[in-house]
Image (cartoon, rainbow, N blue to C red):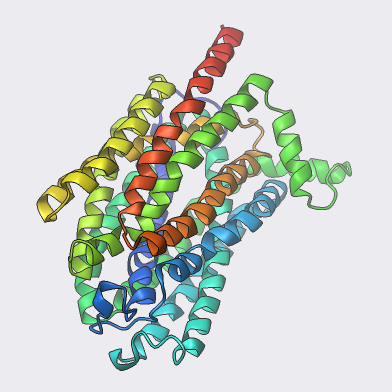
Length: 451
């Protein structure tokens, strides 16, 4: 498959489906990690849901929990520039996706062993459980490293494989697959969680390995991109791996006005992601602790947020290819802020909370669907820098998570209220309107230069 622009996305549907299924499984795993692990880390703490002893937990504070849950983003910030440059300069990016994907599956399957081998009698006794906690964190390190590598390689691979004209459709369809996987697993996982706390983890790991086997069997190598890399090696133009140099090389190939647009989209994406990362980490804790919902019911209500996200993804992917993306940014930012406010003001019981979460998820999906394809539309077309630009996008966004999640955890400790996750989302989405004004200006400059 080459990079020639096609008016139809049909020739690329096989890749949309393949990567969509892989993202579906990835979201199943993420559902276990983000929804159940924070509750397990905090359960048994006297300040968490009245120190409930009904489930096993390590008894950590919200701030300590936020630090553990930020390990994946800490790894990503350190490694993504290296991984992006590595993938762009390697002729084995496809094989590396498979290798690190299998490593993440093997590591993830070991997480529930630590949880299920302890009864509730010692729940919350952090000092006594310290060896198990250290081992759990070590396994998390292995999992997040291999997952970050696999995710980075396959994203650069896919954005090169599919023409830019179809990036929004591709992004939206992949997100839909992921959303379906997350929703179906959330319902089944909440049932399995009541049977055994480790079951959602076992199921996620069991699906991850065959998903990567399917990937390696279906996707082709990057023939043209690999040929260019081999030519650079043959002429001595490719020295030691240098991510900083590769990033500079990437931006050197991009026009000045486009570079300004990339920076502004990154700022908007970063600000909007601050509240989203916080809500992904602590929404279930808010519903469990403040609203008094049972853990499995809190997870189901949280899934309604992703249902709204899912329902909006496909139409926005289609609309974004033909519409003004700056207008869509405005709708997404203002709508997400209003949705978070509605959750705080009106989400007092399951039905009203579900409606507010549905609308908030739908509006926040606009930002996720259009941000990355918008940035990647400026990537050099030869495929030797797509991974680098994508890694830079993820690095900056994840730096936000490293700051925002511990910051919100600290605010929760100070205020004693989990409602801080929603006030953070409101503030950062409204603040993102300022760079949006500048983005409109530079977008007009690019359109004038291309006309």
